[in-house]
Amino acid sequence: MARKFFVGGNWKCNGTTEEVKKIVTTLNEAEVPSEDVVEVVVSPPFVFLNFVKSLLRSDFHVAAQNCWVRKGGAFTGEISAEMLVNLSIPWVIIGHSERRALLKESNEFVGDKVAYALSQGLKVIACIGETLEERESGSTMAVVAAQTKAIADKVTNWDNVVLAYEPVWAIGTGKVATPAQAQDVHRELRKWLSENVSGAIAESTRIIYGGSVNGANCKELAAQPDVDGFLVGGASLKPEFVDIIKSAT
Ligand SMILES: O=C(COP(=O)(O)O)NO
Image (spheres, rainbow, N blue to C red):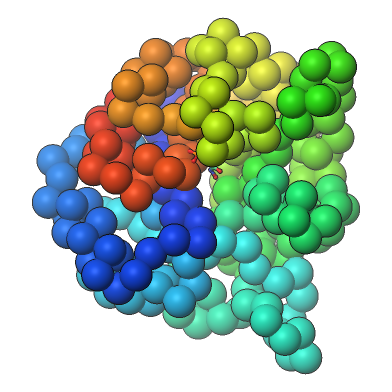
C-alpha cells in the first residue's frame, strides 16, 4: 500500500505575531499537491497554536510541540493532552532530541507520553535519532532501535503514529544526512517494525526524516523508498517550506 507523504514543520521556539502571520500567509497562498498526496502539519510554539489554527488553510493541520504524560493538574508549566483535545489540536510531537537532551527525557518517559497522547485520541509524531558520537561509534541502529522499542511497546494505535528519524548531528547543523544514510536507517527501522510489531505495521507506518532538510536537498531524500516525508525545522519558517511540501512523491 502507498504511504501518504508527510511533511511536518517544527517551528520550535521561534516567532512573533507578525512573523507567524507572514508564514501562515505564505502557506495559505501556496500551490501544493492535494492532501490525498501529502499531509502537511505545522507545529508552532504553544503560545501561537490556536492563533495559527484559526488562520491556517483547512487542508493543513497543526501539532503541539510535546505534551504532558498524564492528566493535567499540579504540573506547572506543562500542557496536558486533554487541553490539546479540547482545542481540537490533532497532532503532537513527542520525543524530540532537544527535549531528550535539554530536559533529560528518557526513552521510557517518551514512551509514556506517546501512550497517554494516543489514549486521548491524539496523533503522534514520535522522534528518535542518534548523536554524532553514537554514529561514529557504530551504535546508530542500537540506539534508534532502543528508542523505537520504548515507543512501540506503548503504541495502541499505529494508524495515529508517524516515526521521525532525526539524527541529532544533522539537526540545525546544515549537515543533512545523505540520501543513502537516511535510506539505510529508514530501511532498518522498517525491518525492525516488521520483526518486532508486524509486517503490516512496518508497511503502513510512515517513517519521516528530519535534520537540515531544505528546498535544495529534499527531492533526492524524498526519492528514497523508505523516506515517507520530513520533519523540518529551520526551513519550515521560510518560503522554501513550500518547495519541501512539493517534493511529495
Ligand atoms: O529538529 C528538526 C530539524 O531541524 P532542522 O531542519 O533545523 O535541522 N525537526 O524536528
